[in-house]
Image (cartoon, rainbow, N blue to C red):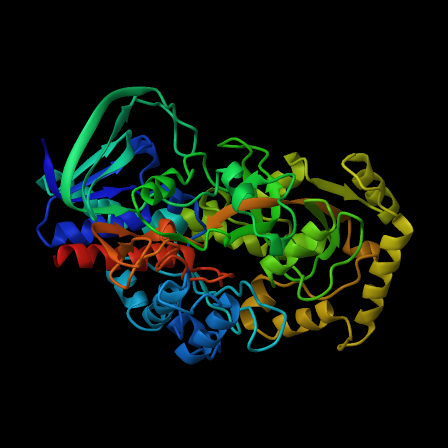
Amino acid sequence: MERYDAIIIGAGLAGLVATIEIAEAGKRVLLLDQEPEASLGGQAWWSFGGLFLIDSPEQRRLGVRDSEELAWQDWVGSAGFDRLEGADGEDRFGYEWAKAYVHFAASEKRQWLRSLGIRFFPVVGWAERGGSLAHGHGNSVPRFHIVWGTGPAILAPFIKMMRSYQESGKVIYRPRHRVDHLIMSDNHVTGVEGLVLAESSAVRGEASNRDEQEPFQYNADHVLIASGGIGANLELIQKNWPVRLGPPPKHLISGVPAHVDGRMLGIAEASGARLVNRDRMWHYTEGIQNWNPVWKNHGIRILPGPSSIWLNAKGERFHAPNMPGFDTLSTLKAIQKTGYSHSWFILTQKMIEKEFALSGSEQNPDLTGKSLKQLAKRLLPGAPAPVQAFINHGKDFLIAHSLSSLVHKMNAMGEGPWLDETAIRQQIMARDNELDNRFAKDQQITAIHGARRYIGDRFVRVAKPHKLLDPKNGPLIAVKLHLVSRKTLGGLQTDLSARVLNHVGQPITGLYAAGEASGFGGGGVHGYRALEGTFLGGCLFSGRIAGKAIACE
């Protein structure tokens, strides 16, 4: 029977980072994944490549003053850790992981990534702006650093190193190996067993077959679970849906491939691991149906600038902080209160040209391909090519030269409820009237003026304030928005060495967890809310911690 120093379950970013750390220490690693080799790298490949950094040279060049103290204020104000009491508190270790991660983002993170050849786009994005009080949710300053080359460029150095260790025999990579059980002896994991799945020709992101072949069993001194969360398991999302966000959504599109099923979480829990904060999750409110889907129910998230009018399904404008790009979960709660799971953007051609971006490496070929020539086209008139493709082909986009015609088209989509053109017109006219001065009482208009004081927003992200009903700014565009699933914020509870804890708070000998499976560290490093750019970073950080801990044993 084959034996290894470590077995890694999941060949995504966290698993790859841990694999490299362990192999560098001279140990032999078995890397298992249920998907075919085409999906090596997991969800990270599809990402926009945003990373949370603090007081970076990129920020300073743009006049942004940031600090670890300010970032920690934002983190705890967003996380809202409230399960800290007692030895079994579900936030006990997530809080400590959060402190360690914020320090990492303010210190060695950027230099470590640069040493691997990773570079950053010079304009820092301002995601999750909050829209409340200083001690509440949101980023006080721009911190969303886009990797030049997006998600694939983050993965590239780790895949290259993994391949090198694979050639030398330090890493054995076996795709199509589905782990079904952890082999346990008392409170000690000694290996894994499962089934080899049939070969699959599925390309990256496509659902692969589940045809079972021969069983396997491997033994190891250490097992790391880096298998991801529950983002594509809509049944499990609805089961764990928190009452505080209203009823579970009737309709949810999927922001991740089908293999993000959360099955290893249940397997680990059945083996004695403690799963915490399972009611904490991160789903986006600005989802659109992909006109060219890769996986079933494929959803794409709009990364909006702050100017679009946001109406609920009944045609009522949301109140602050429920504005585009400000407070995701607050807006999700407001949407769910209506009894419908969709909402609407109404905007102008001028807004969509400057303010709309789409999340994902495949939706940003200029950044992903590192093409300055293509990137320069974003400065030309017209929407970016991927956005224009959705305008042309996406079923959620409507265009009209009058509000009457636009509302008629919105109603013709047929999902209901019936939208009242007069009521929508009154709300937009009231908003437009606020633009006669450079100041306003409308909180969204005030926020737009504030955003344009940041040079990065003024030049590449936020349109000059203008009236929606002025024909020279048209045509008018309506976008039907859906809830799109994405991340698990809770997970397997781990101590500060990434060791998985059992139901009485003791480490399970030999068992570790990293990435989304561990809530990005400790069972929930984000608490209730994320600050964006922290998911990839959480995989990098927790995978590195877990790998170093295993390597030292």
